[in-house]
Structure formats: C-alpha cells, structure tokens
Length: 143
Ligand code: CA
Ligand code: CA
Image (tube, rainbow, N blue to C red; front, side):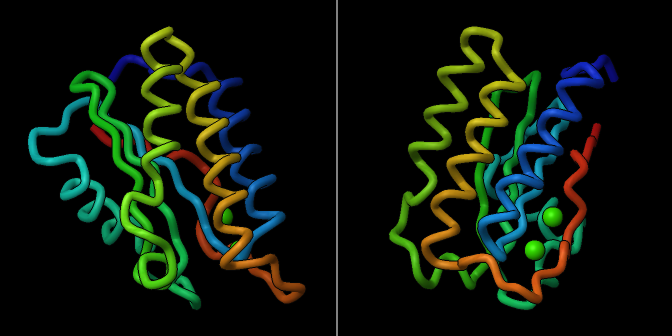
C-alpha cells in the first residue's frame, strides 16, 4: 500500500491522540485503509470490534475511520458515549476533516479532528487520576 502519511505525520497524529487523552478518559483511535465498499459507518463498526475497541471500562472509545481511495470517513463512538451525546455529535469533525482533505492537508485534518473529539469527550468523560491508556495511540493501517 502506498503511504498515505509520512512517518513524521503519523507521529504527529499519534501525539495528537496522546494529548487529547490527557484531558479525557475516552480513548481515540485512527484507522486508515484504502478502499471501503459498504457504508463507512458499517465498516467502522467492523474495525471497531476488530481492534477490540469495545473493551474500554467506560465504553468510551472513539474510532476515526478513513478510506483514502474511496474518500469515505466515519467517526464511531462506543455506547457509553452514544448514550449521552446527541445524534450527529461528530458531524462538525467529519466536515472539518473533509475540508482539510480537499486541500490535501490530510495529517492536519486528522490531527485537528482528534483535538476536537478530545475536547468534546472531555465534557462527558473527564480525565481520571487512575487513567490507563486502554487502547494504543498508534494509527491502525488496513488494506
Ligand atoms: Ca485512557
Ligand atoms: Ca489511547
């Protein structure tokens, strides 16, 4: 698979996840793959379970899903989040990523979305002193 992000861009995104998770007990992951035939939200759900993201204590994992070639995006939160936030909670972040992606600013778009997702999560799931990093901050790359 050709590289969608440079190594330093990947590092920037991993760091953005770490910074976001310093403010919230929620866990953010990014999954990038090339193609996505089904609805991206359906595919994101598959990836969510494949990555074991349903295993967080407070059910507050969030997956940012990106299919690069098919230009599909989804943001999927676990049930702990969906219970407390309004529907379409992540629309602004999806729009933000789309507008950055249109200009070719992939890493920036993803990093900003991570930041914004973290800010929103913070209101519902503040950082706890006994916090654990329950899910890796590394980007998950599919094919
Ligand atoms: Ca955590
Ligand atoms: Ca994490």
